Length: 359
Image (cartoon, rainbow, N blue to C red; front, top):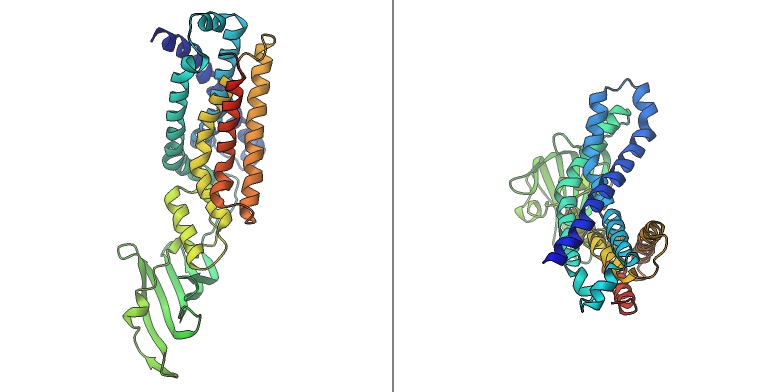
């Protein structure tokens, strides 16, 4: 237990300092990129500070992997340079056994980072972007016009003149219902339709239908229940903005992907981004594992080597993630492998480094 306390006492002050530094740099970069426009638009210090405050969770999310990599790499390399690890090895304590507590902690941080991003970062970053757009006078309008949406694998087609986000309302809505072979079954018209949050479907107003019955088109002044029950496409899909999987939580991302799947539209890229939400936080565990494997490679220029390995490992992971995500987008590999292959690769690579390191 004394060894555990000694290791944590060395790593965590460095981790907190690096975390604060990297998060501050990211926040200041965002500030300096927009400071001229803030001043030009006569923005108050309070509003600018609010934007920065809402950006803090996102910067912390970005900074955690780099900070834990730097603190672990520097601490272990410094201990090797001062022969502290040599003393541990001589007493029969292996490198993996000595570093196991920080590995366990980093694994816990990985899970924590996922929930932190899903439940905190998404909300605060959305507020940051919304307020920043107001201060920079960038208009954002989620109302939409001439809306066409395919649902239920193309068996239901929505065609509306407009969508109102505030009222969650579709105006002058035409609905085409088709069978699995995409043959016409019925046409429904409604002056307006409102989203029911309670029933999770669209409620039609002043509507009627034309239905194909035994080869003839039959008119009715009301809509059969078999059709109204199919109007379950969530209102988010009708917004003007295209959903960015990275900027929404997992629940909303799943809704959007299900819509694409039901509509028969391509969804490989979005599904890859969805899986990435689960795989990316494990970078915290991976960089610690890599740091342990790199221990003992040199006793000189410990700070420089730690910074270089920190940057190199991070860049390699991000580049590999970008490549696999592009491959998944074009269907060369599965969306799951697009998101998780870099994680598996780094685990194997860390095990190889650990095997050939001094333990």
